Image (tube, rainbow, N blue to C red):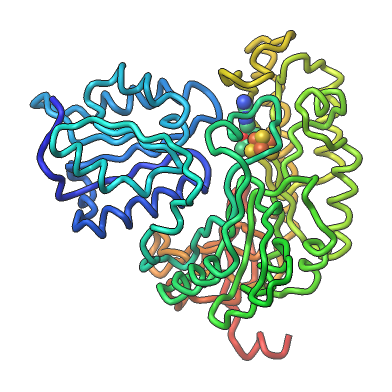
Length: 447
Ligand code: 5AD
Ligand code: SF4
């Protein structure tokens, strides 16, 4: 039975990428403005927003099982909103298949969530998957809460149309948010306690805008302006596309201390024929050349990437080229996925779909190469002294968790507070984290 009472508490569950996490935070802020409060841990919420991801796997199926799980023992359900990319792609179907869902709201329409919630509480079901020209950002409330690290969406959508990818369809065309709005949002986040801001976009390095003097600038110009905000300690950005890398962005890594030495630059495959079939419009060699330029500007830069194994037609030789590329780059970390046919994308109807066992085998081989390099990178950090930005308490008494400049998780025991930058010596490395020891400040000033 669908709930029809005005909700007093909410829970937002975000899946998928960091941009969804950002959207989830913004939806929470919108609901809080309506006087709806977060449901305490372990308690049922009156309103649940499932902020979904459509990029891989049987994401839609997962949504239906999540919806099923929300049904309470007495047969009632909370008010349910399905948001995110599955909502955008399959909104009507969700409404038809899941009667307990009251609202479906796409990634470009969620600023209208309060109205949808009011309608739903009055018993009306509604779908809003518009991609309006006026952006949601203009009407979202000011940021008031932030942890030590915060996300800031600067760019949305994608015009690249890689043949496997749903993003151009679910998130729409590339748009850049205006410079002034971003500076204002960054200032609000810093006032709310953020020490680090990660600029987000599906193609973040395609961001373009005009600064306060009316000059055309790219992502590097935005980073430079943010670096001038005194209480901001660190800047990161993700995800970049190899074809949108500019000289200015590379130079920024050599010149701006607050810009962290970390780059996530997906390549997807090391085989040129596969890259062509993916419509990536770069080659393995041109990609490696771009990385070399980043390394020349910032020799300690930690490199990360995304890979897809088992793209239609991928041969054993193609896959070997991917392993060669991994060997050549030496990633600090990387993400790898089995190809998943997405309805409506060109690759879904290509010939040469790869058998599941072959994909499993390739994924395992690729992940062991990546894990090997990640361990080697972490081990090479032992003995280095660096700042750790403290994000939260660890499990042990007196233990803190934070990130190194190279985005490694670091734990240490010592005096600190969330948001502090603590100088530590890295003393032990595991595959996914390092342990550090705080360095006394006087030792630090002489080093
Ligand atoms: N199948 C598998 N992986 C995919 N990605 C995007 N679309 C697909 C797909 N259809 C991966 C890419 C991208 C990351 C966010 O997800 O590697 O960079
Ligand atoms: Fe998808 Fe390619 Fe756009 Fe990335 S660049 S969002 S993989 S279409």
